[in-house]
Length: 599
DNA sequence: GTTAGGG
DNA sequence: CCCTAAC
Image (cartoon, rainbow, N blue to C red):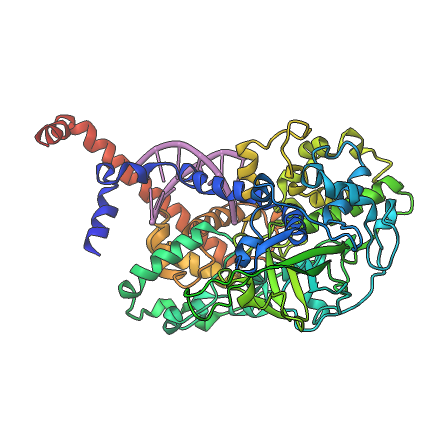
């Protein structure tokens, strides 16, 4: 406490800080984000699909192979040149990538580097055999069903998103998933894919409004922490939790300010994408087959008795692939080409959100990546093996690009990289052809805007080969994307909060935002001191402008008057302080020099 | 880690 | 709200 005060009063002792501490935050963060980005690049969902397709299709070696290994990065797979093996009696494999490459063909300019590198060789040749459930050779636009998918539902799935299905020796026609809401896709992903973040915007959360409304006691009890990537919040939480509890353990009357004045306001919940949404009825499934593999009897004895270590192989294979149901709304006068693009974008978006692979055996999720296949029940001997489902799940590492934003303006705030400049690279110049996306009479070209949002990053990043037309993203762009994905939700200050802020600033002044935070917003985790500072800034501005110019929830004039008063008072204080300092320096310049010399 | 200010 | 510079 004491030392803290000292620092506050005498300013920062630069020399006391480690050199690293002074490094710009951006620099410090950049290194972290870099790894995230590259990881993201590596784990493009489509990559994953391809990987799984590949893995499922070859003789995967010992069943002791861990699940983890099974779904490792496809780059490793291809590099290691795993033996691909396709049972002859089976219908040709159609990997998911083929679907997309077909879609890809709709716009040749899109991505020459698209999927070919992933599926070159054998798989590519078999692309013709692709079929989606419900039949059809998968040619042209038949590859999609628009708005009319079957509604098979599979019980027991608690997973998300894309589902790969495999069964031993059976051509599986999987029953669907447990409930419609469980199966995500474009629109649904938004709430489903980032389930952890959803709490943030849930009514419950809005009304409880974290922090200050809670009694102090709950501070240490488990609670939901906003995960939607505000680094500041995370940092503050981290630090507050260790240093905070003891420091502020005492009850202070003003802490409970909000408990008397608590107020909730509605958080607008808008629909994510009006023109494309899924019905939540259809899953997104790769059908696979599990084959009885050759059995090399080489039991390993004496290694852990519980292991049944026959060197048995399990062959898995994706039989077909289809996209989930998509609802597409498009003006009649839009071109067929634009429709195709929309579909392409929708599908790609679905796959572009940094998914990871999940595995379910007989309806149960297998979370332990270290289990062997055999231990998991994936065994050639397991004739009752009902189902083996692979799913693409949203990565928990970071909020999903398209799915994390609760606001309808996701495409503006979450995906700034997907705007014109980049789109041109992806789609070519005709993308902006007015005929493709006619604006509505009011000039709101929502369609175009939304479509921009739908352009997936992963799509263009699939194989950064020399042929790839899209230039590699600059580091800044990557950083932008990351940051955009992590932008916090906008949470307007309530009058109550404003009042607390004003009161605190009246007391503490305008230069001690951390103290303001601790004093009046200690438990409001979603309000950082920077937020408070910013709010004060806008409050001062609001107070200066005419009431007609003000927007949002009106702040009582009485409060604004106080804002102006406090602002004037404290700026004056600051000026006086500065004057005193200047005066001192002018009067006794030698004194300070002498002090320095002494040190 | 905080503060200040521009965007 | 975010970002950056500077403390």
